[in-house]
Every structure is written in C-alpha cells, then in structure tokens.
Image 1 (cartoon, helix red, strand yellow):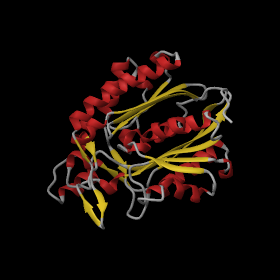
Image 2 (cartoon, rainbow, N blue to C red; image 1 turned 45 degrees about the vertical axis):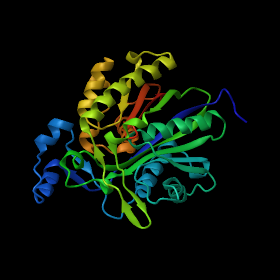
Image 3 (cartoon, one colour; image 1 turned 180 degrees about the vertical axis):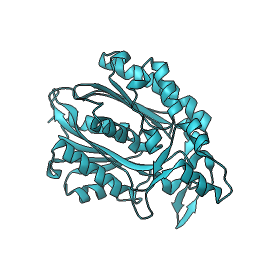
Length: 328
C-alpha cells in the first residue's frame, strides 16, 4: 500500500482568533482591581507581548479549530470530502472524550476519516504535523487537516501575574496532501519527561472532583534556558538531516512564547531576526496554535512564498520539543 516516492506538502493554511482583543493596558486595569500590579511597559519589556485574543465563555477549542480548518481548506481549494485524516493538537480539549478532532471532523462534514488529538502542549502542532507526514508517506492517508487550537484562558490563574499575561487563545491549521515532490523535508521530535515540573497544569478530575492544581504553573527561567538550548540543537539537526544549511532557510517560524527567546535563538543560529516570523506581540502565547497561526499570517501577508524553505519549531511542557523543515 505504501509508496516510497510519496511525500507530503503543505497546500493551504488558515487561522482563527477570538474576536475579543485585550491590550496590556486593559489587562493591567483588570488585574489592578485584584490588587495585582502590572503595566504595559512591564509586560512588553519581559515578553514582547502587546495584546492577546481571549475567547468568551462558551467558545470552545473545537469551534476555533473548525474555523481555522475551514479557512485552510478554502485556501487549499480542498473539499472536506477529500480529507481522510484530521489531527488536532491541543492541551485544552472540549471533553475528556471524544477527541476534539472528532468534533471538528463532524463540523467540517468529513465523516469516515481518521480523527484524533495529539497532546504535546506548545510542541503539539509540530508533533501533529510530523504524525500526519508519516501517515501520508506510509500511504495511510492522502489529505490531512492538521490543527493547533487552544483556549488557554480556561486554565490560567488570573491572580498569577507571572503566567496570566503570557497566553492567548486561537487556532491555526494546515492542509497536507500527498505529493511527488518533497514538501516536508525532515522532522525530529524529542521529549524529556524528567522536566515535567518546570511547565505543567497538574490538576485532574476524579470521582467528580478536581484533584491537584488545575492551573498552569511555570518556572520561567528554567523554561527559557531549556527552550533556547533545545531549539538551537533541533534546528541544526533537522537542517543537517535534510542536507541544507541553517543559512539556507528563508524563514524561521518558532513557537511564539517570548520575544526574548526568539531573538536569542536567532542570534545562536546566526539567522537575521528579519527572517524570524514574530506574532507573539499580537497573539501572545497560544501554545499549540502559535506556529500554524504565525505561518498563516506570514503566508497571507506575502512573506512566505511558494518554494521557500521554512523551519517550524515547537517547545513546551512535557518537556517536549521538535522541528519540521518544509519546502512551501
């Protein structure tokens, strides 16, 4: 069934953000009502974030994911009936089960296709894209919708200034199709479970009660140190595997966690910061949605062009990280 000459290629992208935009000043004013001091200047200096989109109560991950997927399918000129694989990367699923991917599949009208979720937090989209690429290369699928979608505002402690200013909600998607020319050129995924505690949301529901801490907790300094180290190493390894130089890259689309990480990574890789797609200032950290959202923005504003080399990277809780190199 498999065809050794089959590759996968990105043929469409889409993104969707909740309508509500919350500026740093608005967020600071909200926090001040709870005697939590912050400011636009404090947030921008430490993170580069200027605003974020937040979903209203009742707006679910599947709703955001569905709209992003619809836009990606439209961009690709692909009908839902052509889709035979739906993967959603998320840490904020609608339910314990069924998967958010099954809900999205129903919304899209693509019954019968395989559908499942991937949970690798902020690395989720890179994990999901690599999984879809493997399905297509093995001949198990020919057209996949790969989505990163999050409503992180549901799991934030809004009394914790160190974390609540960092995140936003949103969804991004790509359509991946079988191709005779390499689109996805190389990919590598990694994890180190011994670092679980530096970034986690350790709560659970058991016997009808919430057990443990239901909110996101992060050791910011430890995450920064790990992120820049593993992203640098991962970028070089994926480029080497594909037989290209880091300097050959047209665009770097890393996980949008913190502008300091993005700038530091660019310096370590000796890549001009002008080649780094940065959306964290407008979107904040949207976890698994950040990479596909950034890719979609850069495609739609004309920066990312057909034939260019794009390196997508994720890093997040688990501790997980990975990279995908694609010829667009």
